[in-house]
Every structure is written in C-alpha cells, then in structure tokens.
Image (spheres, rainbow, N blue to C red):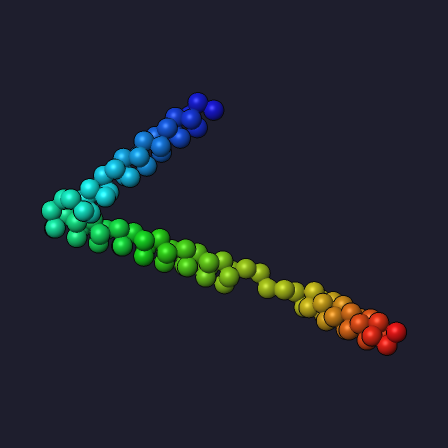
Length: 91
C-alpha cells in the first residue's frame, strides 16, 4: 500500500508542476518555445488518438465471429417473438 501512495504522490506532484509550467511555456516564454511546446502537445494528442483508434480497429478485427448455430438460434427466437407479438395484437 505504501508503494501505491508514493506513486500517487509522485503523480500529484508531476500534475501540479505541469499545471504551473505548461501555461508559462505557452504564454510567457519566448515565441519559439511556445510554438515548440504547442507542436509537441498537438503531436502527443494526435498520436494518442490514433493509437486508441488503432486499438479499437484491431479489437474489432480480431474479435471472434458469431458461430452459425448462434445465428440460427437467434433467427428462431426472433421468429417466435414476432409470432407472439402478432398473437398479442390479435387479442
């Protein structure tokens, strides 16, 4: 448990430093530094977004397909539900 708290404290300190330093680098540092920090930030955001999309695509591709038996069972259940709905409407 102590390791988790130490890790949490480290994350807290790093986040706090980023909250203080990042706006300074964007708004008050020189123009070259500001542009560089902006480029790095945008690159990281696009990379993370692309990695998430890649992961979702891979998951969809590698997911097992429905077996034929399950599809047939699903069709039979759908037919029975439709019959029951029709009977219910007649009453």
